[in-house]
Length: 319
Picture 1 (cartoon, helix red, strand yellow):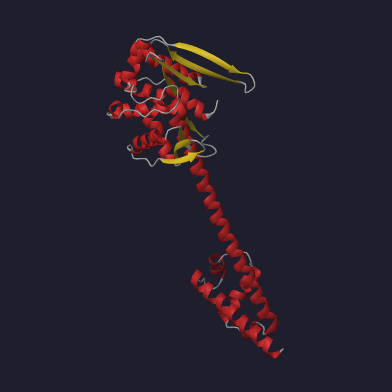
Picture 2 (tube, helix red, strand yellow):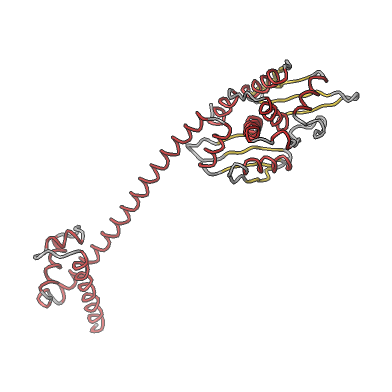
């Protein structure tokens, strides 16, 4: 099962005892993956469909426990796509009307049009109801990427108005949700790992939250180790390059003017570098008598390089 599927499975088992929260969650399900129908007599019926069994089961349970209404369930198999879709159907006008009035969706629907309903702000006035609403939107039309690969949370809406409503509610929890147009849909999304952790906490998917946090910790540790290794590698490369240049300059001085024209301190550090080409400045300093600090060694080596460069220029002028 994908990580997104695990989150939905966990959320399908999450249950709020407050009736107003149950209505908010059901309103989200109807708004994003439901259809509201009216016949020629003005009688209502509702159909909520999903390819996720856990989501269909949650919708059925919400209708049953919140309104004491037993909905019908239908299953459709697509042999070509090898997929199964589920529909939770409320056929009786009286039952559908009770649900729609409680969710305040009776005036917001377009008959037979799926995923096009905005939710009345009265349904999501309280913070707990907004949490339930976000949980319902994710169950209905949400997905998450595998955190081992990337961080991405999204909810797909057919209605721009509903997308902005969901964005506003998520941003109300101090997150920075964005909207992007994808073909005919509007996608509300989060990209930062820390914000996805926050949204999982808001939806009360605590097991999935811990799993994501473990992945984030491992990733951060791996990145920290890689940064240190890269930094150390860069320092080693820098030291080796400097050492090679120093050896070249000292060898040039030895072969042209000889060490006899060098001061005692310069000659000592030149011989130490030729003998120990891989040593660090600190290690070279300890080899001298008396020992010299890194800055002193660096000063002498820089002086040798300047002398080598002057010798090269003088040799070039003679040629």
